[in-house]
Image (tube, rainbow, N blue to C red; front, side, top):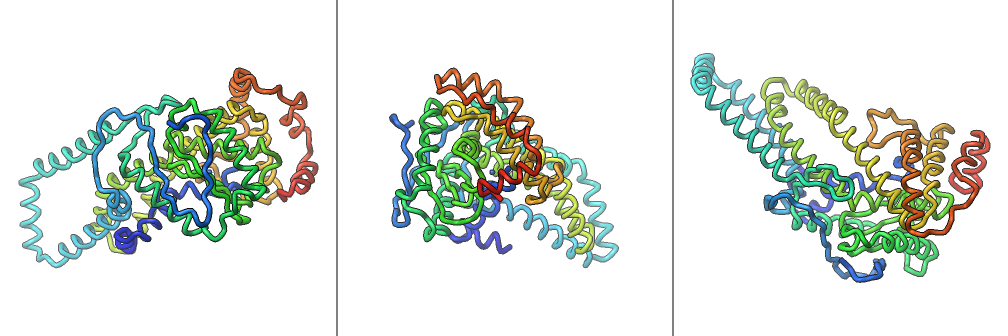
Length: 416
């Protein structure tokens, strides 16, 4: 209920966006390893910069979208779950107060109208499926069919709220544009964006870079094109090529509309779960209802949400690799990067996650998948007339190291 009430205030809306909608945008790097004229130029956001950023979305619609207020898009998730819970509890309390005669009367009333009630439920399901089908579109970068429920206005509103919330939270830590880290990151991001401005998804956004003076090992890109990098993230990589792989991965999430797709999918799943949640709270005592609801939500996460999240991560890895290749970075460093992350796990520096309980593929899988995509990325890089790659293959060199030598390498580069 608090989440619903918060959604009616500006700060509440920001918190819901940050905590519920763009949760994936604030992942730490340790857990990850998360039409403009030429040239594309990053706009620095400073502490005293109060200019509003215009968000332009690239859309590929199959039909016109439903227009619901952006505020409703913000609170629909907590609203559906709390509403289902409240309805179930109220129905249970109402039913418990009925006499046996009244209960029998209502049972007969339901039995006489059973077909109509089932028909109404069937109509609702068909309507929901129709809404789903009308909001399917094809991603131009991957050819995958995706569900995007939010229209441009809602996407812009969510993006602006998220941007404002992050700037408000970190405004006292934003480094100036003459900071060495900002200059380094600006050079890398400029290079990625300029090399890929042939993509409408890149050219139509107004990209900005914000560097946060924090040891947090984190970097993310908001759907509106606002790139946030924490200084701690720079200590998780050995060179600019690896840093470019991380930034290209996060940019790929935005180009593929993954945050918006995740919000849309979550809304649909919550609507589908509303009836089962209401039935659970109507049929069982509160303690059992809590257990059954938590169990059901966890099962849905394991079977639906988590595999889907891992799919999006693999997709962003692949598209990000291509973005980096077009920018003439050494894409072989992508495999080395995940090898380093795997080494951190083997050294017990980073915790080892159970693959089917994780939002991300494990490091070894990502290392292997990216290695399989390397020939395509290298050919793409060659087609851009990039400088020749270093004849010393960083992957072969890394794989030749023992675990002790890798530990020494991590320490020498400040990662450990």
